[in-house]
Length: 423
Image (cartoon, rainbow, N blue to C red):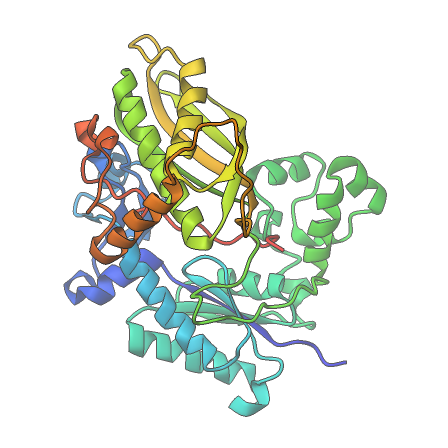
């Protein structure tokens, strides 16, 4: 049986490259896209290739980045624009295969196994064509990996940057992949790398040769998955892409949103404003997907030593109503936080999980007071926001903290990659 032919395309310095494509005067200059410093979100989200040459790192503070490069150009994120470029890139990929699986906004796997013959039969030629089209039509560059499995294809796109094409074949993977640091393998994060290095595993090749007994004892089930990745034995398919849904079908297990507050939260009114703002975003996304949650959880990070904790509450009935999500989150917060100057809060997070689809009908309780149909009211508000923007209708409670006025927490939320194990 012939090997599969899988590409992984990764758009280089994505946010910064899009900004340079939109404004050609930024080309060749050190540019970073970063959060708002006045809201205490002043960290680098993406740096341009030019900024990278100054040693600027993703997630470092803006003051550190400016110290390295005094002429640094700092731009706020424009997520809707980035989504638009992401969709345009996927539209190009889709012309070569209907199996296009996004991995975040800037990365996609493309399975050419069944369509390669229609495009000349040479994967390198197809990869070059895609690279040139992205450059000509979008003004951005991509790095592309080619292999017989998704893991090595992604390794190839990461191997050389920017604007490079790297084939990882059965003939060269032992020289290229196995001799690379183990941290270069997908899902080997800092904690796993430290654990592996502590036991003398420094390269992907060493992990590929680890014994069953050692993996079971040291890493458990995940160890066998990582060894499979290291050996190139992953057979996970590239899921078909549906352009109409603008993403892959995936099992969503929860909806969450968090925010670092513009100032230390020391008053109940400020905490309530942020809780409702977060609950609004979470519930709105549930309603868009036709889901309801049975469990609400919160995360709290204090402003003194940045320590944090989380807790959750089971709801009596599944809901997608903002009011119910916010009330549950608020009850958990006030039960654990005094909300005073001695206990300042830095960040809050609200999450809805234990998801179910709405039932076709709902049995009413004869002995409980009838509540307004809050979810139906929310859907009417959602329609207004779809037409006029998320800040066109704002709840009064969200105005208790002036520093949050005008914050579109849903529209400005960072889009994170879809997990590899979302199946």
